[in-house]
Image (cartoon, rainbow, N blue to C red; front, side, top):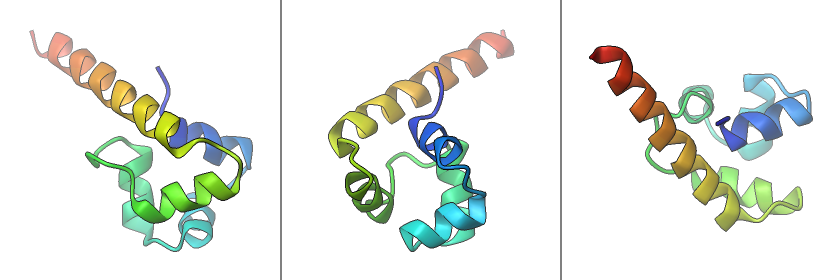
Amino acid sequence: MRNPIKKIQQKNNWSIQELASVTNIGFSTAYNCLNGTTQKINVNILKAIKVLGYDPEEIKKEYQEFRAAKQQELLQKAK
């Protein structure tokens, strides 16, 4: 499973800095969201997602699924 925010970033060919600028967030917030280390997607990212024509609720759901899959992968590696 891929991070839906990363999919949108790559589809638009944005660097992390560009994603941060477009969504009006800091670089570290963008970086953490792209790596799945934030529990929730920043509200400014969700606003930008809506402007781009995506359903923010669907993206939030996909992001939580991505995080759960990443957690399970890490737990499996730890065994």
